[in-house]
Length: 160
Image (cartoon, rainbow, N blue to C red; front, side, top):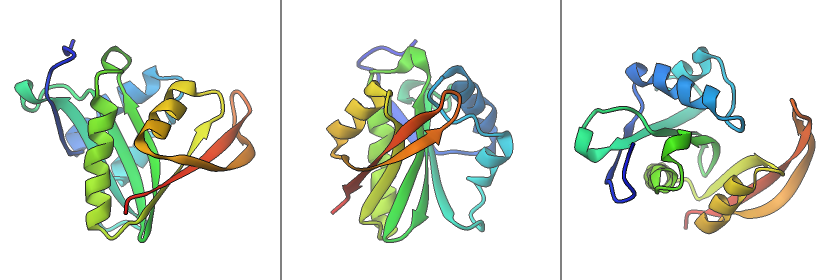
C-alpha cells in the first residue's frame, strides 16, 4: 500500500501494463469495462485517432505495480479524456492528479487547447476531482450510460 507521501512516477503505458490496467478497471464500478483490444489499441502510435496513455506507480519501486492509468484521444486542438482510473486502495493519494498533470503536459505539447470528457451524473467523487482540476459542465447526454441507465455530464477545460 502506498503511503500518503509516497512520490508517484508517471510514464507511458506499455503492453506489459495492460493486464494490470484491466484488473484496475474491472475492480472499479465507474471505470469503462473495455475489452483488452481497446487498451492495446491505445498503445498503437499509427492508429487514428492518436491516443496518449499513461500509468502511475510509486517512484521508490521503479517499475513496480501500476496504481492507476489515464487515456486520452487527441483531435488537436481538442482532446477527450477517455478514462482516468486509480486502484481503489490507492485513491485519494494524489495518483489521479499526477496522471492528469502528465497527460495535460503531453496534450499541450501536441497543440491541444481544450480537453473534454463525459462522466456519470452520480459519480460525485469524479465530478469533484474534475472540478478541482478546472473542468466545467457544459452539457448533458440523456441515457448515455447503460447498466444502470444514466445521463452523462459533459465537461471541458482549457489548457491555455
